[in-house]
Image (cartoon, rainbow, N blue to C red; front, top):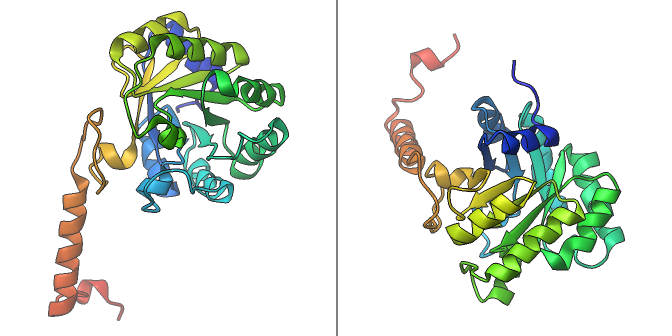
Length: 263
């Protein structure tokens, strides 16, 4: 029987050069499937604003919504580590509010850790949360909550800043760091310099692990698919085909048939 994924286990995986497989998911059913497939980490991302809620970006997502979805995922994952994503303005105002909000992920939702975006600028928050006993995954590079500041979803190429951010979040106490939208050579350098695992999304193969949104990798998403996504299945077409067949049988009277009825 598999055992729950822990922070020390992720650290050992980096030491042994064993790759970490992570996905972003938002509900009980998909969490069960990801867990059964042996996924190491399930991030409940604020990307649910775009993937599940149909919003233009992640900014409107609330703490209550994140706690709600993280709770569903935590109940579906028996072994994968579940990480709750701190939404916009859940941690930026002050450390006391950051601790209260992060604590909700652990206490109410059953997550093992939280993630927050930013490098040097959020290191005081990472220190405060770590000091309060709340494990923190950092996130640098292309940070969607800063979409307006960055002028869109752009690859981040400032090597000096990115390396400084990575070293700072590690020093502040982050147990791992997501590298998003970073050229492969820079991500490779960061991965080699850090003792904590790096989880890449659009950051090349040298990262200690990779993460993709489950809806993207299964071909369920109707939104734009970024260059860094590999679609392992095309389930949207299958789902639509099944629904069309169902609707057709209902309208023709072929469903329900005798075998679907009670005597």
